[in-house]
Length: 257
Image (cartoon, rainbow, N blue to C red; front, side, top):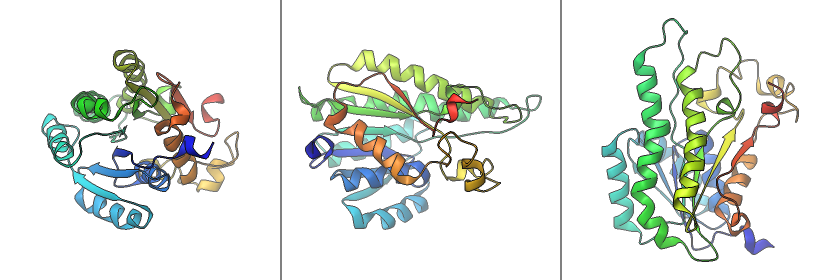
């Protein structure tokens, strides 16, 4: 049973890996034995994440803006130069924009969809050769996309993140579409996180994580181990018969909205 969840000898790529959920997932992957590449457009955050995570395994960083085709090409070229195969790609890079309905700008849609949707598609397609090289008949390669519970149920009124929620619903459908396209050699799934401590959720947790978490069915917000656990499951042999799934990791939040 333990071997089902081990990732020894595997190579994983985590975009948006400089902070927040990306670091949580990377920590789990490293603890399970994977070699991990972090990618993000902010080099200082990547350096800090590598310094934090290097005690747990083989981790390095590649700066790239994955909301652009040039950034996707930069990351693809760097990975191709360093690795013959990749076993898991975590498309976790994300952007958000908040503005009222009357004032929401076109640029707020363009930026968010470029990173959250188009970037996921372009990077996945670019890395398919390396992912196929890492796949075996009894252990396919993996793509794991970060969606959101905001892509499952509509945000509460006053949460003016129109492009973000729409983009995450698009990520969920793109996940299902890619799962059919890339089977059987590459499995494609998505996670839909709820409240975890990160820069993106700072405003949502303004009342304090304990107070906000107490209103959820499981009585708390997400912890790093919760994200590490789902990442390891979806990258390991334990999930070999799972593709096209969108898995809420939200403490039950999506059941009460």
